[in-house]
Length: 206
Image (cartoon, rainbow, N blue to C red):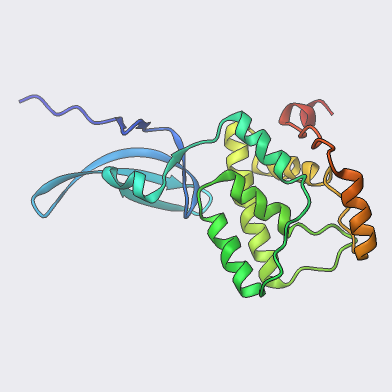
């Protein structure tokens, strides 16, 4: 009796491939299992999240509804690095409301939305310290962004964090400003293109 050939690819995803699962970030498909549920054969992606020491089993038909996606392209990574160079856009709403919005962005599965949280919650040394909850969200977004950059650019997690921080440093000076100074800074930078993002190659060559 011939044994059934084990599946190595489903829905455009294959074993060994790194993917982004919105709620947990970057993981690796280590297997495609078949289980019997209520008399029906069900195929599952087995995804390992090494950083969290966690394994997730996701039914193949559900990957679209959960938002699982392939890694970002290098051009999208560059766009995310340009995003963190921008001026923070902080809504004047209650922190609890903003925190929910930041959390939703971190778990959206979108690299650009995650980079917006990194940009908006970053604090330089000459700025007031963050609250504990702000710091937690910033670190969660930074780690989520760095993990994807590390896999895409074949960097260590530390190198990826350094790369993001190098691009954050290219952004507008992030010190406390009077309304007049803020207005002057806005008029000075109006129409100016964003700096070219610091890339992994530039960091290696430095």
